[in-house]
Image (tube, rainbow, N blue to C red; front, side, top):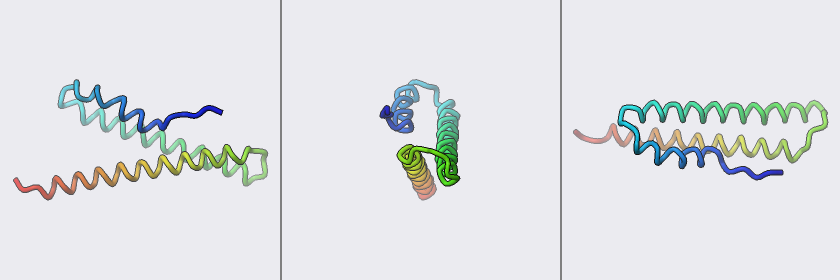
Length: 100
């Protein structure tokens, strides 16, 4: 069994130096692409966990620890994305409260 790093955190840290060197107009599309890719990865992880759980519930031979690991990874990824959403909404609300 291999241990993998959390992909979302390594993707964000890997993109940070690049985003500083880019032109100001391209950062919004890069953020949108990164967010879209993260949501697609989250969805695929949730589908894998669901499929493994359905396979186990059907009585087929599936390693219980693999099912639990995939479910926990899907839960952690979902929690991470919810926290990102909360931070984005909070930042938007803070910008709306600013007086010009």
